[in-house]
Length: 293
Image (cartoon, rainbow, N blue to C red):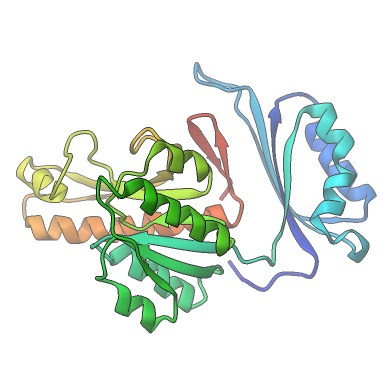
């Protein structure tokens, strides 16, 4: 996807109870205001026992100069918002979300995201890197990104997480990415970061927990290796799933081969999830996500 955008472009995202006339209301308001719709996607969750009855929409559009402010556009939609019970947001497409990356001692996802950012394929701003170890301080310095070593123990966890939240606030962070950060976040921190923190992990759970999961999988003759990226919630590794992928493996591969393949998949899945979130393509739908690709 090109990062060159027409001037005054915005992304509208909305969620509301499904009813007749929502698409007409949205497209009609944009047309009457002189906006040009570039891309539009919608989904109504109406089928199946787990259906929420919610309607979701993402519209990429160009606004005339006199409407080119998110607050102005929100005021334009106020009546429709009340009429349909919409949760509606407007995002300037040119704005670059600010990311805080958190990592422990496995750096493959961190390095992948930094390369994508530096090469221009991930149009975000890297606000800082936080780690409970110093292993990747030199890597952060090589990219010119502030590095914050925040060690954590059981006794210091609350204070350490308060420092993380302070950084999120001070640095105006839009998204926290747990790029193999191997600490369980407390419920208060999960709540404070609800909808703006993404985690990545292997997809063997709950079968292979703890250390060296790829070695455990190899010992059991697993035939599929996968990874899951999801929003962080207080329910460990059970937040709404954004993206998953798998790769076939077989008996000819070693445990080290399993691990290498798994790390590659983790990088790709996390990068997709981060990109889709920062492009406002992901809308939370209860315990699951709607992803407009």
